[in-house]
Length: 139
Length: 112
Picture (cartoon, rainbow over the protein chains, first blue to last red):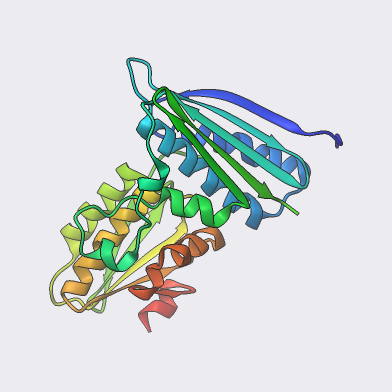
């Protein structure tokens, strides 16, 4: 096993289930370092939610997200960048199950899940795109 | 990981049991709603959803499961999730799903 980090860089177009490509890479890296299934399971949620959020907000004639996953045996860093028009993360309401049950819109859980399962989350958004940076401790 | 999603249903003693297999995303969520609508009758007071063969669920897919919980609440029915992967169970906990749905280790346990 190498002591340094492993890095996966990939550009994903907006096609159904494309997030599974990144998930497969994540699982291979986790297996290489012997990361526990619990940690990889949570990392799977982080990567999935960051990518589907990015693809939802990506725009133009060529919507895509750029995904960078860097893993050591102790830490995971996930960067997902889209080319959309950006959004104000502060304006995203925190979802509550009681309200969602009586609402026509039952979506909007991605940010809450990413905040809950990560150790650090940063969203940088501007009119040319959004970058989500996630850190998760693996040890 | 296969992108194929399948769902099968059975009815045991007036309880609808749905078993999923594969990634639960928006497309799978629509299939779950369609399967539920096709098989659920107002006389049923329990629906069991076995997710043992679904290891990845995204938040859009879960929004469809919340839709089923809402429909069951309206008819005083309850939804029981079984065979949950630990990460999916944690996801449901974060979302507060278990305030309005139940969980069991297996379909057999849920049917008791």
